[in-house]
Length: 631
Image (cartoon, rainbow, N blue to C red; front, side, top):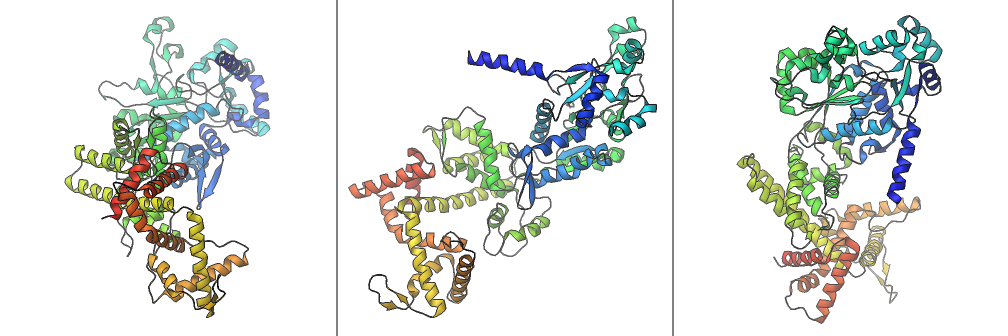
């Protein structure tokens, strides 16, 4: 009964949205809300802008795209700021076809689908309301009814820009039904919908021999010619082509460059002049954004053909590369898995991250910079500082490889292999090693990759495995230390006391005996050696720590072991080194004694309660780390 009530509420809200009146009533609406008469590009830009944006690392992240597209912030910022914004201001950019170019499964179709669904929802809001002449097959803007001679006067009075002419059907209706009295023409509110073929169109190329240009521009209704006498009578013509129905909104041209030339010729006039030719009528005005997508090889073949020069100049290219951030790639796989019916299968921590590491590594170009390897580059792209490089070096690295992300492993391959692993699991859980195994098995079955490419990808799986080895050891290390944070803090404070005494050339006091002692050089070196601080640079490193400590103190901020990335790494590694033998014995013994069993259970419980493991993958992790330590 609750659902039936919701159905009734839905019908009621739909009725409230509906509106119908005369052209005279419509003028009152636009006086109050001028935005209802905006052109298609402006409407799309307004839709995106109203959802808001936030700046992340100097790049605008638009909330409109954030739920579906990941790792493309820079590309989407360029799309909005260099295409939609100037097009919304009626600059010449709006007379261009937007061509999204990129590798397969890079997000092109998702982006277009988001714009379509977004427009549909936006047209149902007060801010995005759209009104049209009732009965018009192209649901056109009612302001087209205003005669050319009066438009300048109207624009001054209402401060509104009017562009476009009546379609043949509305011109006939105005004279035949209303004797030219535009104020009596009926206007209604419309809701853009791809399903209802209203303001959202899609054209898909097929066999050039069988596909008809009528799919784009409509066709003659031969059953009515006898009644109306001529093909030039609007009543004998079906204005139902994709260019007709997409008026006021968006038209997607799928795989545009695969089309026969005769289909592309219609776009020349539509993109530049805003009109197209249909049947035996004068040019028909259409206000729509045309978006197409293609891959790089097809685009190169297209521009190599001199016949296409006219259309080339009417295209704006936006490259849609693969994502190059591991953390964002993980979100892609999480999203795709969440859409499935496999919610009862547990995915161990780091499993999807490992798949992402493999994907991203395959997309990166080799850098010529000394000391920069693919793993460092991957981490730097993901927001981590690495040895010898900082975030400020990113721009230089990106400029070094402008086509980075236009090739590599696509998300579809990875999700196919993840799906295979998820379906085959017998434990209702897959871990990182299961994922890497599935990725490797997929390469053996892949018919289209060369031996050289296969070896390259196998190497990336090995690199991802090494990354996991470090993560696994660190995860178990944290779980084994009963009070990890406290242990780290004690060790860190002890180190700081000794560093302060060393740099100030003073002695430290024993907390138990009050005896004054020299700084503990052995303790300091045991920590510093964990991150490769040599004897020659230890003084510089310690002074840097002291300067950072003083800076925090001046700002009233607390300086703990996580405040310095390298020092945190050193403290964690030192703790793990001290516990390595305990971990090794406990995880590798086949017949643990009561104490060892107790410790294993405690560690498993901690992995389950705090790190997101289940009993199965926690047990597998402990076994794996035990085998690593025994090598």
